[in-house]
Amino acid sequence: MKMIDFNRRKFLITGAAVLGAAGVVAGVGWWYRARRAPHAGMETGAAAFPNALRLPGTSGVLGVMDVAAPFTMLAKPVQHAILEGKPAPVLAYQVEQDGKTWVNPVFRVRTGATLQAKLSNALDENTIIHWHGLKVDARNDAHPLYEIGAGTAYDYQFPVPNRAGTYWYHPHPDKLTSKQAYLGLAGFFIVEDDEELALQKALDLKLGATDIPLVIQDKKFDEQGRLLYAPNEEEKVNGYIGDTVLVNLTPRPHFNAATRIYRFRILNGSNARIYRLGFAQGGRPLEYQVIGTDGGLLDRPYPVKEAFLAPGERLDVLLDLRAAAVGDAVMLQSLAFDPMHAEGSMAGMAMDHGAMGGMDHGAQPGMLADGAAIDLLRINVASKAAYEPRVPPKLSTLAPVKSAVAKAREFVLDLKDRRWRINGEVFEMNKTPVTVQRGVNEIWEVRNDKASMPHPMHLHGVPFRVLGRSGSPQQLKSVIVNEQGLTATDLGWKDTVLVWPGETVRLAVDFSHPYPGDQIYLFHCHNLEHEDQGMMINIKVQA
Ligand SMILES: [Cu+2]
Image (cartoon, rainbow, N blue to C red; front, side, top):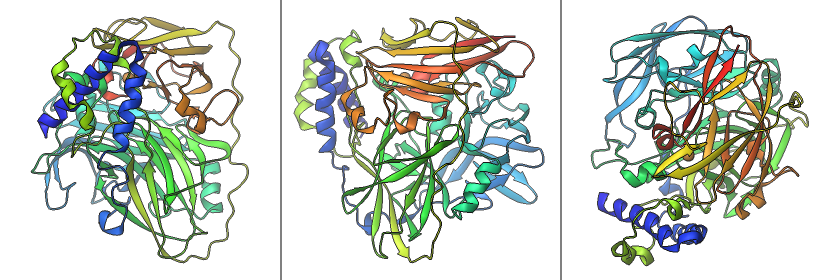
């Protein structure tokens, strides 16, 4: 298995290198092979999805925990059988309160509430928690400057000013984020406000039953069911791709539904894999409504048939099963796409003709290529429901984007000597190449090199709006929803935005905040191998 993987990666790099400037062509070729991959649209029958999707209960793994009193999060290895009958060590956040235990809890909190938590590090290395998407000061945001050693603890205390939305938390220590997140450390952080509660009431939604957080993660396992994390040099450049896709830590999952509306809060918690999400019934794509993104509800529902979701991003969707009949099945899928690995053409790597022999053999058995079609979750329509509600035509009011006075600030993404760079640099802990003034609205222009791969760029502490995309690849055309070239995933308040090769993405960032003193935040790629390899830059917000 390891051999196979090595050969495939080797091909991916050398294939692109051989084709030189036509690196994009190599990407397309890869896509066609991916479509022929054995997993692509493999078996969609009930027998192929034997495992009940893990749903958030009131405790245990992914249990919902209402944040009220202070609590302690113990980061530690635990035994957990992701694969049936194969208990194996994973890393987890464990919380104990009122006689109950949660593992990677789904935190639920009201806007304006204060979170008081102690991180206790029972790992054998440094760690720190980043509250992804929350508006907090630098100390609570957990820049790796604040990482703590094994056996020590860190106190968080901050009000949650965010509007309602699906946020999350995960580790952020220097150069260890990818490994720790991959081995299990991650969870949802759901914020609610009056508007959100009104929507739940209008659509009769209940968290864990009809309002379901779904975290999608691709993993590799060994024979004993242990998670394998050992990226080789190619995988550090490409990102670490798994061959088993889990939804809520469940492989090959099914969910028994009734004929009503369901809400899915989808988080791409994978290290590097992008998904092109669609629902289908009998191979026919179903329309669904995008109602929210990273930073909460949109102004209205946006009907789509597919949407890209990159690592770190969230998509809040409604699926209407009222037209379905009992006995029907609806698949949540990732559709095949060109992963656009065009980076090899500029990577300056030596050609290896020996590896080309494997080129025509396509994806190897057991591998799940980047961009391959994947059946993620089988939704069995199992019962009839009397369900009257209609989706409200208006969901929320988004504050208008403030116009910026300054000229755009540029961020250029490229690859040199096998390291991904932002503005020609790789991360240095104590260097702050970017200083912005607190209170200023800036326009950011993020430009990705043509000979590159897609980078999901994440900004800490400060949410932004996506203003426009240009130079987008052809495959984005079918998902663009407005004249600015945005996709449904780009709408509303964002903290992570996907930038495809050759694209320029314009952002509006509002740097006003209430915290005294200078704040050091981060702007980085959420392909976690890229992040750990230094595709990250300090952003100083000067008081
Ligand atoms: Cu990246």
